[in-house]
Length: 452
Length: 89
Image (cartoon, rainbow over all chains, first blue to last red; front, side, top):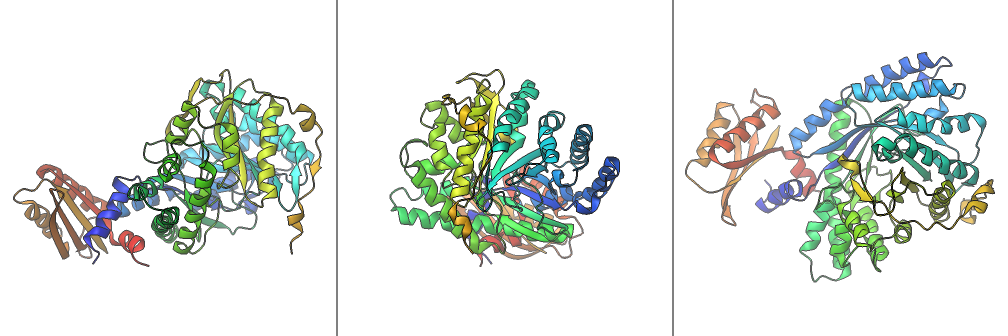
């Protein structure tokens, strides 16, 4: 039998500290669905997604009931669609996007990822056509998510595609302007994208993966914050230790869900993504953890330091709790999804520049950042280039999910609702990087790529 | 399958009876029970065996929550594995 203290603590983790599982994501390999006839591909794809994810919603609900752990999202990640649609016309590509979205709705899957391409090295005409279709694909769907990998430590950085993506993101913003440019929240640009990431918008089923896999993304910043609240006067090593222990407990819950879902759906267990991911709920915020570590407001000096130790302690605690770990493991710092981050932006203590510095030690990058709608495409491209450089030269994953909200000015507010939250439009350094971006070409990989 | 049931609320006569009779009616065996007053709240923790229970997990849980509401306490039931996973290596 457990001690009363253990039981009460576990129940409080869920009831008061918002411990939840962010997502169960079923990854599905679509290579055997390919066909040069688009309709045939769509039919094959539909059958296969239903085969693997048809019961996802029920199983997730059952897990919620059994363990009393809320599961915030049910998701599906597909083989990057660009790999299966080389010969397709623009119209065919949009048909595929619509079909995927329809399947997601039919299965009551919250988000479906994989309208993706990897162009860290080559940027051929077919992939260019695919990337050009992303704005229309996102504007005509609700649940489809898209990503593009533009650099890796092994291959270098593709500046041609980064230059193009500035315009693509502006185009998505314009085409979804009636929803505060919400389409941009379903699109992310990556460096060193992992194959087994359960988090959107960047989830896809990588080419090295099997026929199917379940990946679980955990959440639980509230649990860590509450534990730190009891350590008001502790030294920093004790804070680190406390975070590590809580990360262990949170990840154990994730591992349990992974095993259970794997058994029920008869799909091999993939990874647990050891992550602290916020939700817009108060008390479920990474910013609040950083403040609990000792900052007056997130964004002040000391923020990068606090985030670095948080990120590392989460990985160390979680690594022992799960058999296979992967994805983006670490701490997420999206702005609009985190009530504490939004407050810091409103108070003027958190700038884009500080966020960029923070991304050198977090698990992703510039995430869910709303900027004025009239920012030049080249400025967005340059923002991407900076972030990708941090990833490529430091051998880590980084990403950019930026929303140039159409028609909005600095200080205006946008509201996406649900998990994606709300935010003030942030101020942007507008000095023009046009000449740099227009150079195009490819940056050679850094010297650390020559490791063998 | 075993589960942990917790009951938290303002102390009064008949809480244990109300919950345990509902369990008995549904063939749920109580394996362990502890009860205390924590921070002024009545707190009861039960380890139960659901092997002979005919109801689905969620149905029994709903019945317990409903009965709890009738007598003014919060009832919760979770699979034992959650506590095992989080608290035992």
